[in-house]
Image (cartoon, rainbow over all chains, first blue to last red; front, side):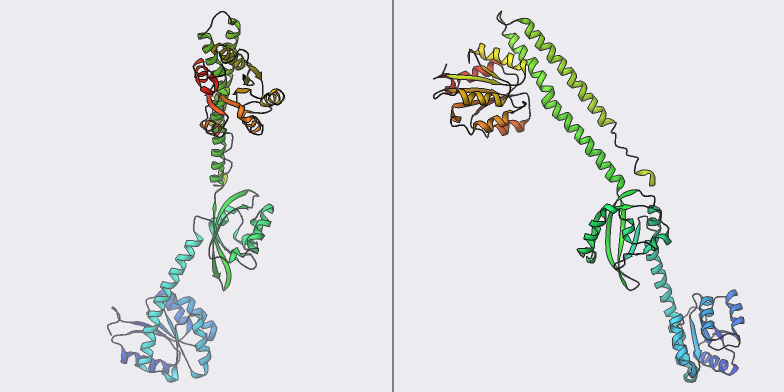
Length: 344
Length: 132
C-alpha cells in the first residue's frame, strides 16, 4: 500500500484472544508493516490514549470486561479526539452497532461476517471520513466565530415566538443584557413602547417573510437608553425553525451629527436671509439719502437728511451685531455631540 | 386723462426720499402715500375714475398686505389694465424678480434705493410720457 507515507498504526481493543488473532491476521495479510497495539480492556486503552495519540484508527470491541455498550462508546469517543473509531460487534449486537454511528463512531463491522479486504477498506474509509469531518467541523466553527465575534451586534430570533435564540458578544456588550437575559426575551422587549404599533405593522404586513429587509428603528438598551439602529435582516432556518438573522448597526452618533448639521444649516440660512433683506433695508436708505443729497438744493431741510443717515447707520450697526451673534451660535453649536458617545 | 402716482411702502425714510425724487424728477407733483397694500387698494376702489391711469411704486415686504398680495388683489379689479406697477424692494433675491414677471402690470423692477436715473427712464416710456 502506498496510501500512507508512514506505516499504518492501529489500536485494537479486544479482550477475546481468538477474535484478536483473527483481526491481526487479516491486517497482516493486507498491509505491509502495520504497527499494531493491542489492549484487553477500557482501562488499558484509556491509559494508552492519554499518553500516545499517534494511532491512525481504533478497532473497538463493544463488550469489554470493565466497560461495554453505550458507556464504552461515549468514553472512547471522548478519548479518541481526531482518531476514527470502528466498532466490532457480534451479530446479536447488530442493532446497537448501527446506533453507535450516530454517537460518532465511523463504521461498524460484524465479527461473524468479517473478512480481510472488508476490514482494510473500512479502516481507510474511516480515516478519510474522519479527516473530512474535522475539516467540516473547523469550517463550521469558523462561521460560528464570524457570527459570535463580529464587532457588530447580531442575533437570531425565532420568527414565530419572536424569542432571541442566539446573540453574539457585540450585542451583549452593546445592549447591556447578558446572554442568558437575551435568551429569555423577545424582540418586543428591546422595542420602545411608542414603536410597538409600528412593529406590529411590520409583523402584520408579512415583511418578516421577505428575503431581505432593512429598516431604521429605535431600540432600548438595558440601561433604558434609546438608540437609533439600522437593521438588516435575512431569513434563516435555525435548529429547524424559521428564524431571522439580524445585523444591528447603532447610528445614534450619526443621527446626532446630522441633527447638529441641520441646525447649523438653518442658522446659516437665517443669516443669508438677514443679509438679503434686513441689511439691505438701511443700506438702501443710506444710498437713497445720498442720492437726494447729490441733487440737493434749498427746498429740503438738511436736518431731515442727516437724521435719515444716522438712523440708517444705527440700524445697519444693529443688524450686523445680530449677524455676528448668529455666526457665533453656528460656531458653538449647542447640540451636545457627546451625548451619544458614552456607550462607545 | 390723468396719471396718479402712488408710493406703497412701510418705511417712513424711504417714503420721504422717494417722494423727493418723484417730485424732483417731474413724475408727479404730489404722489399719494400708503403704508401697506390694503390702504392703497381701498383708495383705488373708492377713487378710481374712468380714463385715469395709475403708476404705483410698490414695496414687497410690508405688514397687513404685502406687495405680492396687493398684486393678486388688483388682478380682480375691473380696471386692472389702467394700473402700472414698479416694484421697489430692498431684497436682492433673484427669485423675487422672476416672480414679478408673472404680473402684466409690472413694468419695472427696481432694487432700492429709487434713483433719479430710474425715474427719468420711466418718464421716457411712451405709456407714461403722454400723460405729462
